[in-house]
Image (cartoon, rainbow, N blue to C red; front, side):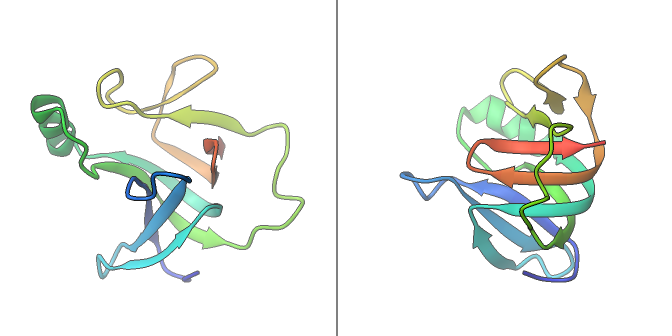
Length: 121
């Protein structure tokens, strides 16, 4: 893991498993690939230009993800107050809460695993 901010997105090249790639925000270089990631001081980002390109060309391009500072994962990380969020470029313009459909742009923490992205506000 790294101490500086990273942009995390699902790596679709791994067909048989869910792997998340982490790109350093400053350098733009991929600094790791993990199945589980915990981030603090989170922003959920969607590039409007990238979104329009995906909708227009009907192809998958990296244009949305979760930005934050990596934090160590421990067994006490998971709690009942985590909220699942998702983004679908064909159905939503932003990340939205699964439970009520409200848009989400930032969070205190994000826990990213094989089942998706979960946040605490």
